[in-house]
Amino acid sequence: AGGFESTLKGMIREPYGCFEQVGATLYPMIMASTYFLSRTAPDANFKQDMQSKIMNGYKKIVGYEVKGGGFEWYGGSPAHESLTAYGILLLRDLSRVFEVDMGLIERAKQWLLSKKDSSGGFTCGYGKYAFSAPPKEVSDAFIIYALCEVGLHSQVARELDNLLAKLPGISNSYVFTLAYLACIASHRTNEASILASKLASLQNETGSISGAGSTITRSGEPSCSIETTGLTVLGWLKHDRKNFENYATKGIYYIQSSVTSGFYKTSQATVCALQAILKFSEQAGPSQESPNTILVGLDGNVVAKTSFSNSVPQSIIIPFDRALFTPGKHVIAFHYQGKELLPYSFDAEYRCVLPSSS
Image (tube, rainbow, N blue to C red):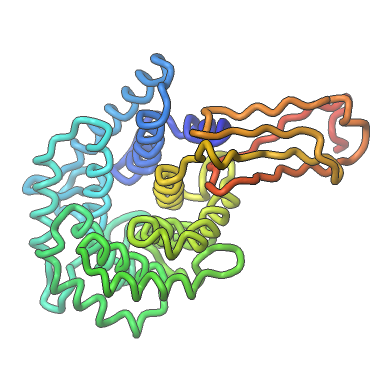
């Protein structure tokens, strides 16, 4: 848990650049802020620094609004559809931890609704950078998902119907995941249950959802699999944790194994990963009756352990005899025994007398 908090603290950075660059920094900070403000009592200086950086990012996002609603990379006209959908989700999540001008979100929502096309989807301009020219089924699914998430499911019911009708001809599991989340937000339980089972059948032995193709930011592997798996786990937890908990747990283990230098490959993958992890840990919480234990193994022998219950502590420190580390190679293993998932990240520091040979 302490390592996981260190990972989140590493995401507190000063936002800069265009809308997409600001969002790449701001959205992970929103996830981190959600965790720290709801679960721990952060240090006053850290909290002030975090909120200051979030404020700076929010001000930049406001500056990229296009007259009449919606967002563009630098605030120029016209606004861009999928970027605006992304902005709506970002601002919705930001509003949970920070005061946001709700009129900004409302204008973006209404502008996006005005971009419906005659084929049961949405127009989507070519755009720039990562959001440029996603396949139409991807942009349609992402926009429908975003609008359903912010309470406009009745206004896009026709478009969701059209998306669901097209799914048998679509092989990209990322689109299935967005349709699944849209059905959950629209309270369409029958369709959601069918999609939940479909996605479970696509989970491979690593825990990831197979078949992920282009995402809204045209991510390649492994980012597209992390995004798809993170969003799918989020859906299982929202919709039917009881029946899909084992699948969700496998998905979380896959996501956690994908972290590199405090991030999950890309900013979009990081956001999707954190949404799933925070939702899982929100629903978890070790009980007094069922203590959890972490064992430390060295060369096949247990050399230290610690147990905890009630709630996961901010940091878990496991002391052990450093003299056990004799010169030479060793195998270190950590074993977690408990019924609830423990969010974590792992870093290793060591010192040696001689530098590595060149």
